[in-house]
Length: 322
Image 1 (tube, rainbow, N blue to C red):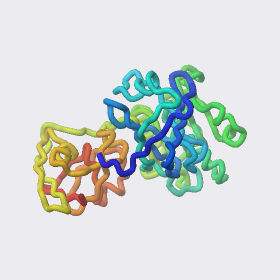
Image 2 (cartoon, helix red, strand yellow):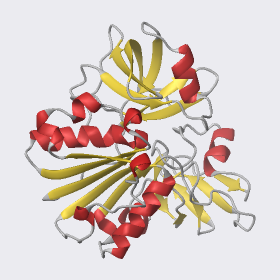
Image 3 (cartoon, rainbow, N blue to C red):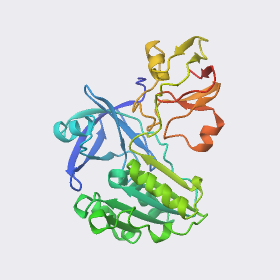
Image 4 (cartoon, helix red, strand yellow):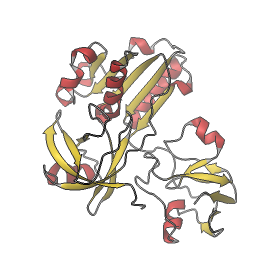
């Protein structure tokens, strides 16, 4: 992985934040600085012997004084949340990436923000920005029960509380059971922003389709990629590195990223699921077969970018700006 943008940080504080969640405040080590960021951004934390894991930034401000992340201890954890919950303590040093943001607030007159569980993290930062800008919005936060809700002090702050609705599944108030009134009538001037598990996102998409919202009115971030990453009938193709003219053969059981890394081509790689955007690379020639959850439909249609970790090629050769 390229390391030009790695930042050494120290864990300033760790606090419980709803049942099963902890919040960490990270500060830059001496001689380094934290870049500013916009709501929706995330960072990688590099975990020893595990690798990078992505977490949304949810600091009260994005001015770079500190970064805050909130991490749920997941039963399905691949090691990241378990390590941070059980082994990281205040004063520890960590390495993070600079913020990346593929979940920006698009321009709109009003917004509906829908969070499923720990998906509240990027949406909270968006809600606080919209509050400060006096832009109309609603925040709908879905949890299993009230004790699992994170950030309640911030959500209950006077300026934000009047926009916020907490829905608990144990009170028969899940998105599947009840659709918010504001979602029941499509409004062309409203943008819907959502973050949560796959089932939550699919339920929201179904509700929006039922009530005749346009597909481009939804922007979302999900926890995993449900697109097929490798199929037995995937075709073979070549990757050409534009700077050298060298071509590399990609088998059906290989990803573009694997082939390039084996050839010692310098690329950035993080989640390897097509959900973080760190490996997005410019396409000079050829037609990508997009299998990510990062690029918008408009960006996919342009055929000028590709995620190296999971996407493939529809054309025999794909020339990359590397």
